[in-house]
Image (tube, rainbow, N blue to C red; front, side, top):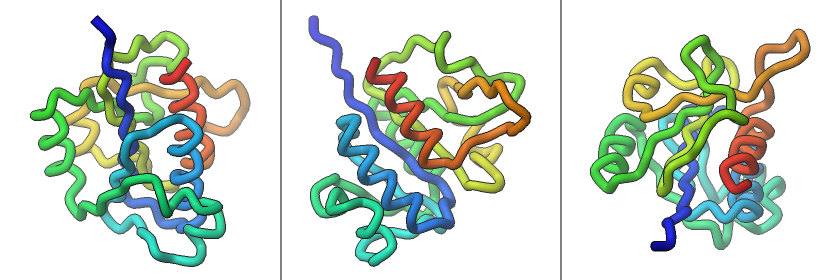
Length: 152
């Protein structure tokens, strides 16, 4: 039986429209089925998003949801695994994570990360191991690394 390797990207409270544009480009590169823009995350049409997306915002499917937790509950009912990309002691290092598909990769605010209420809904919490002094990456860079790892 062929496994369904569908991946969705959920962005919670992303303030930078340039990061949102990057999500569209990244989604195109890694075959993301749909992007969910949640909370106060900006959404197309916006020139800042289009500039960074380089047109991917015109063909990558997306939806806007104000309440992330309601979206995640709906996805869980559809048997989509919720995988949150977030630093923390409970997080599994991404290289050790064995994904089950279909899944939704959740990324959060550039300054606050993913909210605790969303972490509580996660099937898994994964992190990118940090080898330097910094504890995090730009959210779009982190999403790209996460999606690359999930695809490979």
